[in-house]
Amino acid sequence: MKATVEPLPVHGNVPEREAVINLSAIAHNVAQLRSIAAPAKLMAVVKADAYGHGMLPVARTALAAGADWLGTAHVSEALQLRAAGIEAPLLAWLHTPSTDFAAAVAAGIDLGCSGWELEHIAAAARAEERPARVHLKIDTGLGRNGCPMAGWDALVSDAIACQDEGLLRVVGVFSHLAVADEPHRPETDAQIQVFREAVALAEDAGADLEVRHLANTPATLSRPDTHFDMVRTGLGIYGLSPFEDLNSAQLGLIPAMTLQTQVALCKDVPAGQGVSYGLNFVTDRPTTLGLIPLGYADGIPRIASGGPVRVNGVTYPVVGRIAMDQMVIDLGPHDAGDAGAPGSALGAAAVLFGDGSDGGPLVEQWADAAGTVNYEVVTRISQRVPRTYVGGA
Image (cartoon, rainbow, N blue to C red; front, side, top):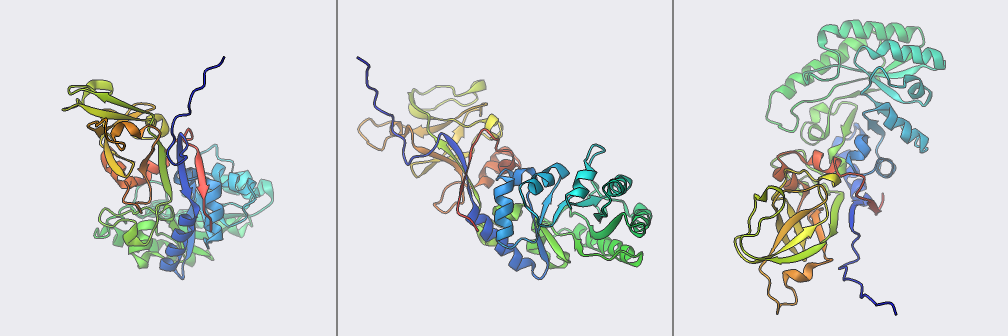
């Protein structure tokens, strides 16, 4: 006769691990940013799988909520959007010699151009017998992609020559800001001035520009003089703040991702118990340890010991080193006579971060623990963590 095993308790029907993406929050954030940027258009940046939130659901939600354009880093990302039936204006701006420019031209994807790409874009347009749509990128001071001002005249001249040949249209000029998340710094003023000069030179040379775009999320929120014809918002549409001194709520934004799992084990240990690799944390009293089945394979930074985990309405710090698949929290002393004692947490929801509406932890606390930024924490949540989508536009 087969033995019967009672199912273990799972509190609140929480999956083993999941990132819950609130599409209603995405829609709210798009609307909020559009209202701030108006009359400028809004590009929703959905590169890097929409900062870990899921490119296709986020793209569809952002467009339904009023986004005018979508932005990706790579052509391959933009082609996925086209393959999914998305016909909205699309810009991809980070290329290599292996980029499939012909596929991009055929799919009607706008292409950023910093210089060397121009001849390849023109060749692709000739092969496809279709003019390419090009946004010339000026390096206004960030020092990454973009054409230096010293080479701008030559790039504009070559692009206009290709335009006169019918191979492309120069429809945009753009750049990227370096320190807009620190609004007090003067470098942004200098970048705006260079950008204005570059736009004027392009227009004088014969470019009939549809969009001039410079602002990222922090500039959209803090520098109206950077809005021009369109703003490119990435972090903001996911409800996160780019500023150290202002949180999401103060900006009218709602964090869209909640990362949660279940408590996998509760274990009573004595004082002097070492915890996790290196034993760099040792308990100072008898206590109950809770095992959280998320680790750096799931995208949690290994260095983020001390990061917050909320269980049964209480937030506990991670103790000891974060491992590949798991981390440990100290639930506190165990009282066998207490029905709400730490040992009863087995199967309870364990929330690492969310929208903070219940006083729970925010992604910024994990960024602080890891010595990084909120952008990185959400973007690196791995595909081992299933995404669950709720809400909509």
